[in-house]
Amino acid sequence: MAGLSLFSSPISCSVFFFVFLGLAFSPAEAAIKRYQFDIQMANVSRLCHAKPIVTVNGRFPGPTIYAREGDRVQINVTNHVPYNFSIHWHGLKQYRNGWADGPAYITQCPIKTGSSYTYDFNVTGQRGTLWWHAHILWLRATVYGAIVIMPKPGTPFPFPQPTREFEIILGEWWNNDVESIEKQGNQMGLPPNMSDAHTINGKPGPLFPCSEKHTFAMEVEQGKTYLLRIINAALNDELFFGIAGHNMTVVEVDAVYTKPFTTQAILIAPGQTTNVLVKANQVRGRYFMSTRAFMDAPIPVDNKTATAILQYKGVPNTVLPLLPKLPASNDTAFALSYNKKLRSLNSAQYPANVPLNVDRNLFYTIGLGKNSCPTCVNGTRLLASLNNISFVMPKTALLQAHYFNLKGVFRTDFPDRPPTTFNFTGAPLTANLGTSAGTRVSKIAFNSTVELVLQDTNLLTVESHPFHLHGYNFFVVGTGIGNFDPEKDPAKYNLVDPMERNTVGVPTGGWTAIRFRADNPGVWFMHCHLELHTGWGLKTAFVVEDGPGQDQSVLPPPKDLPQC
Ligand SMILES: *[C@@H]1O[C@H](CO)[C@@H](O)[C@H](O)[C@H]1NC(C)=O
Ligand SMILES: *[C@@H]1O[C@H](CO)[C@@H](O)[C@H](O)[C@H]1NC(C)=O
Ligand SMILES: *[C@@H]1O[C@H](CO)[C@@H](O)[C@H](O)[C@H]1NC(C)=O
Ligand SMILES: *[C@@H]1O[C@H](CO)[C@@H](O)[C@H](O)[C@H]1NC(C)=O
Ligand SMILES: *[C@@H]1O[C@H](CO)[C@@H](O)[C@H](O)[C@H]1NC(C)=O
Ligand SMILES: *[C@@H]1O[C@H](CO)[C@@H](O)[C@H](O)[C@H]1NC(C)=O
Ligand SMILES: *[C@@H]1O[C@H](CO)[C@@H](O)[C@H](O)[C@H]1NC(C)=O
Ligand SMILES: *[C@@H]1O[C@H](CO)[C@@H](O)[C@H](O)[C@H]1NC(C)=O
Ligand SMILES: *[C@@H]1O[C@H](CO)[C@@H](O)[C@H](O)[C@H]1NC(C)=O
Ligand SMILES: *[C@@H]1O[C@H](CO)[C@@H](O)[C@H](O)[C@H]1NC(C)=O
Ligand SMILES: *[C@@H]1O[C@H](CO)[C@@H](O)[C@H](O)[C@H]1NC(C)=O
Ligand SMILES: *[C@@H]1O[C@H](CO)[C@@H](O)[C@H](O)[C@H]1NC(C)=O
Ligand SMILES: [Cu+2]
Image 1 (cartoon, rainbow, N blue to C red):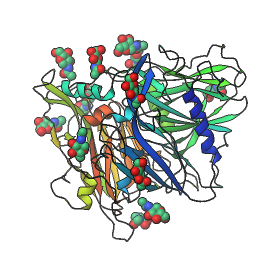
Image 2 (image 1 turned 135 degrees about the vertical axis):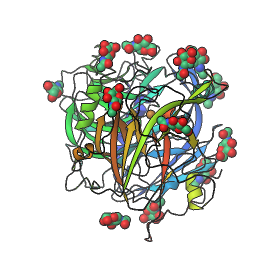
Image 3 (image 1 turned 30 degrees about the horizontal axis):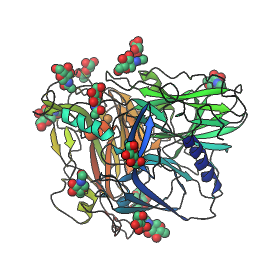
């Protein structure tokens, strides 16, 4: 394997190694999978720059968590770095068990330097590709990894069994220290410096300086089929991904099976995962895989292309790789038509249980804005809001406050609709909007059905926002461009086989309607998965009340739960 690529390096070897391990273990029944995550600094060099980064066990990207549906997973996270810390297991439902969800100050206080906390959860009713990442500050820039959940023993995939599988984690790299970048942006009240590169499995690929040895390569054999588990771990960029000369068949997103469809490029937003089958059916050679940003609003973005290599076995490294043709970075039409193709498999075994009646209708506007900030560069600070409220992080975790009934930590009066109705996506409203700030959340009755329409606005600018809900999957029942029309649009919903997922892109200048059944009690974060916008306040939480039954309330907190 070491001779695989001209650009071979120890890290690509370790990626291969772990993929083999993942396929190798096949326990007969549910088991406990234990992991030790030491959060530690490691020196890493990319693009001719060396710097210390925060890692798990010194690895970048971090180790993959392998589990089977039904397993219990225990991950002891020990913090050796000079930052408060927490990890989110993105897409795991954590039934009654928000204590293991991870967002700092939402479900737990951070793990302080020198302390440990064991995330202990069961993987119930889920299988597929998910991922984990730091959920405090901008530390997820370097602290992320894959979660691979295999189906129960004896349960095949609902698609042709691949010969092998690979994890493909897309990311963003900064040459300078990411926390300094974030801090500088906050001080200026402006967006901080954009990333210096995109990466595939932590590597930018040979189109960047000093990067030949920092190239991920995967070897394939002609005629065989491969499963790629693709994850967008970038902080701020929605990404296209493609493979030169090869089509991809999408079979799963966010650990939910899809109706398979074939495409030359995928679109994947931060937080999302996409599994594709790739058939090695081309002339034996070397082909680039590449990734680049999608941005269809007038906003600067890191537009550089990261590459990796798909190489047929036995082909010499000297053969020049061919580049894939990705959609133009502003190709709105591709984005809309790609997302429209995503449908739940909706088979007898994997039904789409879409709520048909709605108990609670929510309508949230997404806004950017500016508030006064005398110390900032322009005398103003950029911020973001839902229903004109910019979320303020509490000093103690919301879930603790909820469980122990601590007063004064949050308010449950987050409005179900915006304070004013206006032409949301119409002419830009550039005034200082005086958005209000608050730790305000919505209370949701146990087992009620919720419809939430997320409406982008042209406050400062329109932009696409990937929204992530913790503790649940939801169904994407409708989407459109312009203003949501409550009279006409619901009639066009797909209530049969809409995509079920945990992160959805609200289109630039458009809206998205999601539905879910609130059967998981606890406090669940909902936020834009662009870290920049999360930091600016584009977030809130749902407090889902306990149900009346014995097994319908939040579990007691673990003994080692960190305190603030
Ligand atoms: C990183 O490199 C610096 C300078 O060479 C060194 O002082 C430091 O100990 C290294 N840190 C780690 C975690 O290896
Ligand atoms: C977690 O790891 C730390 C550091 O190695 C250790 O001291 C602690 O006992 C571990 N906790 C558990 C529950 O294993
Ligand atoms: C996970 O399942 C085990 C075995 O059924 C149970 O003892 C444990 O309480 C469960 N943990 C959570 C967090 O639900
Ligand atoms: C951001 O970029 C500017 C211009 O290149 C540079 O001067 C500054 O040092 C950068 N900030 C950080 C925190 O790296
Ligand atoms: C990829 O799919 C397109 C459209 O379905 C088809 O025209 C093309 O022949 C396919 N290419 C390969 C290499 O399979
Ligand atoms: C990429 O962005 C840079 C700076 O933001 C810009 O100068 C350049 O023209 C862009 N390149 C392309 C191909 O859009
Ligand atoms: C996309 O960008 C290209 C090149 O910058 C430009 O020519 C084209 O008009 C843009 N398309 C749209 C739909 O904005
Ligand atoms: C900040 O001020 C500069 C100079 O007046 C202006 O060009 C820029 O658009 C302003 N940016 C924001 C976000 O207000
Ligand atoms: C909203 O604004 C858009 C763009 O300016 C315009 O085309 C549309 O007619 C407006 N809609 C209403 C209801 O005023
Ligand atoms: C947001 O709220 C402020 C007051 O806090 C108000 O001045 C402003 O008009 C509101 N903006 C919108 C878009 O509702
Ligand atoms: C939630 O409500 C549905 C529909 O009424 C019902 O079938 C289901 O059993 C309820 N679930 C729980 C956990 O109460
Ligand atoms: C770490 O978290 C604790 C508890 O929330 C807080 O008191 C402390 O100030 C934080 N430390 C840093 C360095 O942010
Ligand atoms: Cu956003």
